Image (tube, one colour):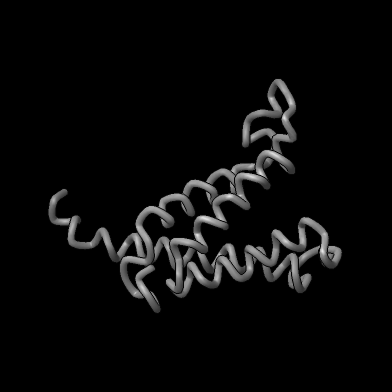
Length: 127
């Protein structure tokens, strides 16, 4: 498996780019109502979350101050999970597969990884 080590930075960069792209699309859905059932109410908490998804996802995608953008995006997803998915309920509602919070948890930890590593490769700046 040592022979795959030389591709680690490439795979990480692709993960960062695709994660940023997908997160940006979530923001586009919330802010502009594209391919969504409804548009989010202007200046609501979900709208601000969508703005963070749109801008933060684009920054991560481009690798422009990706550490700090990922830090904010990770925190946003932690809030999304606790406040909108788990809602501090006891029992089965704690589990992401039951409360439909898998994406929020996954994004939270992927962005935490990006925060710790930065842009690495194929980015506008390496911060």
